[in-house]
Length: 194
Image 1: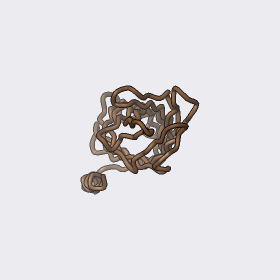
Image 2 (image 1 turned 90 degrees about the vertical axis):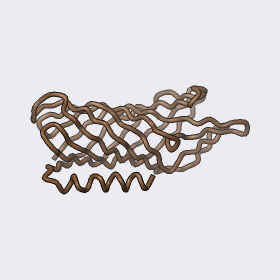
Image 3 (image 1 turned 180 degrees about the vertical axis):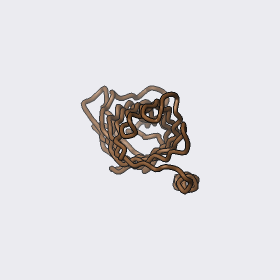
């Protein structure tokens, strides 16, 4: 995981040093998360949380840019067969390519996609009523979504975050069995650029 992060940052540094316009802002919004097991044996009800943090955009041309964020995210799961709820606090680092689909400098619709690195800020192991829940320290996921840019200072977006690979699996286990699952998240966001 560390090698992937370092490689991604090294690829971004030459782009930052180009004659790219850099814009800063604050991004925040709503997480709507659902959890699913590989065999659909386990699933949880939708869980609503929030996220907030700084964002940086690199304009690399008329219709293309890169953006990255350091986001504090509160998400989790509610179990549909009990009243138990588990909060998941994370540091998210999404790095997205952004391509203009239509519009002008003042008003434009962009498609965004890219990798996201997730770092668990809470406990790695949680005790449930009759089971144990184990989280990884970090995970990898992929983003895809649409963002509406308004007047160079406001961005409204919807983004789907899909877990990728074994690092994004969490395990619920008891004495008899264990089941791996992944959290899929829909994010609705607003960003104010300075």
